[in-house]
Length: 508
Image 1: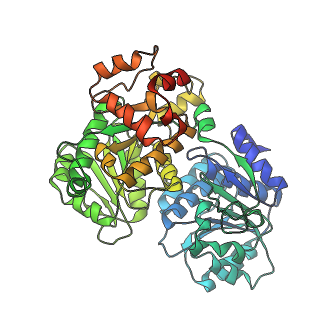
Image 2 (image 1 turned 120 degrees about the vertical axis):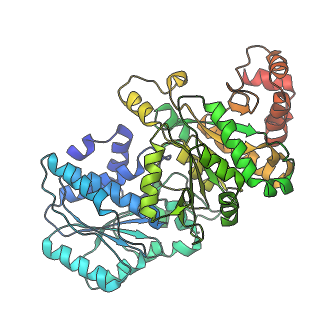
C-alpha cells in the first residue's frame, strides 16, 4: 500500500496494529515520528473509504501543539493526494494559511489537485455543526484538531448526526490521566480510539485514571524504549553537564543569581559542544517571574550584544511569546523558533514555563537546564526537545553515510542536561537529580563516562584499569568529588553500597 511505503518499518508496525485493534496505546520516544504514524492512520482509512464524509479527531493538550499537528497531518494528506476539510476546535486564532498554502502547492506540483479551503478555529457548537454539514454535502472527510478542554463540543455538535466519528487520535495522551481532562475519554465516542505518548503514566489501581486501565486505554499496541531509538539512530544520547557558577553556593544565592546562572551555563555549554554547532539551550524555569527577572537583567543585555537570540514563552500575558523583547503571535513565534533551531550558526536561549515540553518540532536544541523540579514524564518530555537529531546528521544516517554509534562524526552526538552545581545544596533537588539519573539509564546513560564538568571538554574517559580513576582525579580538578557524589551519594541504588574497587570491577 502506497501510504505504508512512506514509513519506517517500526511505523508500519504501529499503523498495522491499529488495523486489528480498535483501541490501544502507542509509546514512542520523542523524535521517532508519532505524528507521522497518526497521519498515516487517517490517510489509510480515507484511502480505504474514498469519496465519503468521515470524521476524524486529533486531540492534544495545548493550542500550540494543535497547530503543529494540523500542519503535519495536512502536509501528509496533501502529499498523498487526499483532499479533506480541516478545522480547529479550540479558542486559538487562525493558523498560518501561507505555510499551509505552500504545502498544498507543493502537492499540486507533484501532480495532485488539492483545492484551497479555509481552516477555521472555533468552540461554537453551531460552527462545528455547519462544518460537518458542509463536509457531508461535499462528500469529503473532516479532520478536527481539538484541545482536550474543548473536545466535548464536538460530541455535542455530532448529536445532530447519525454519523459516527471514524477515528480518535489522542496526542500526548499521558495528559488524560489528569482529572481535568479525563472525562473526555467517556464523552467522545468512536469505535476506534488510540493514545500516543512518549511516557505512559500508570496509577496504583488498574481501574483508575492511569494508562494501565485497559478498559479505557486498551492494551499497549507498540512500545519503543529510548535505548532502542538511539540504536536506530532516531534520537541522540544524553550527557549530564555539571556547571559551576562563581559566587553561587546555596539555594538563596541561586534565587538571587538566576540570570547569572543562565549566563554562565550558556558559555560553559558553548565551550563543551565545540565549533560544529552553536549553543541552543532550553530553560525550564520555576515560574513567569523567573522569565521577567532574566529579561530585565544585565546578563540578558550582554547575551543580546553577543548576538544570542532570546526566546521566552508563557501563558502570562506579561511574558507572552517574545523574541528579543518583541511580542508576537504564537504561530509566528513557533515558526521563527523552528527556523533558528535549524540554523547551526544561530545562538539561542529559550525560556519557558510548562509550554514547550511536548510535541514542538524544533530539532536544534543542544541542551536543557531544568531550573525547577520536573517529574518523570515532564523531564523526559523536556529532554526529548533536545534529543532530536541534527538535520545533517539525520540525512547522513538515512543515507547510511553515518552509523548511530559513530559519535565522533556527528555534528550533535549528545543532548546535554545542564545542572548548576548549587543544586547539591538542596536535599529535594538532590533527590530529584537521583531520579533524573535513574531515568537516564534507559537512554544508555553511564554516569562514569557521560558526566562532564566545567573543567573538562571531552568528558570522563573510559577507565581501562582499576587505578584509572585515580589518574583521572589527578588530571581533572574536582572530578573525583563529582563522581563520588553522583555515584555514591546521589544514586540511591545498590551500587552505592559497593566499595570503589567493587564498583569498578562490576562495571568494567
